Length: 170
Image (cartoon, rainbow, N blue to C red):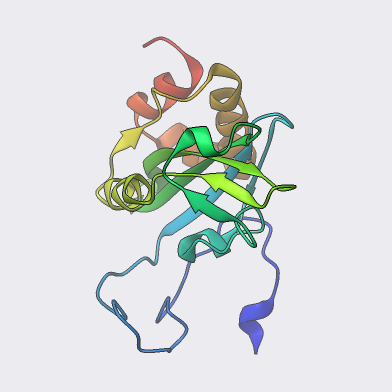
């Protein structure tokens, strides 16, 4: 099975994103051009983790999530950023970029996130929306640097709204 191959960069999911289990939602929505980027706020690091598509990222695994922030007082902050890549005549670009908040207390095995927000932001990314205004400045810089390092040409072809949203000027 070649699907187990670790991919460091952006992944493009082909065929059935549910891996053929045929369960609820199988084949309803094509997620071929979206990648979840996780930002570790404290470490100032960003990485792609395709497991986040099904709330099974390395950060989320083994954690019981609550929609109540007070239940996770020692949570470490993360962002899950849904990045949708689209192609135009000049080449591919970052078309939809939407960020969702998440905190995780690994020791207590508890976390905070609003699942409806994560689902809605994934949908908004697929609809080519940019929602990054609520991110902290450090995380915006980390995401901008990550997207540029992945492909500076894609960054340059992306909307002014995205570039200004992450680099300031708004």
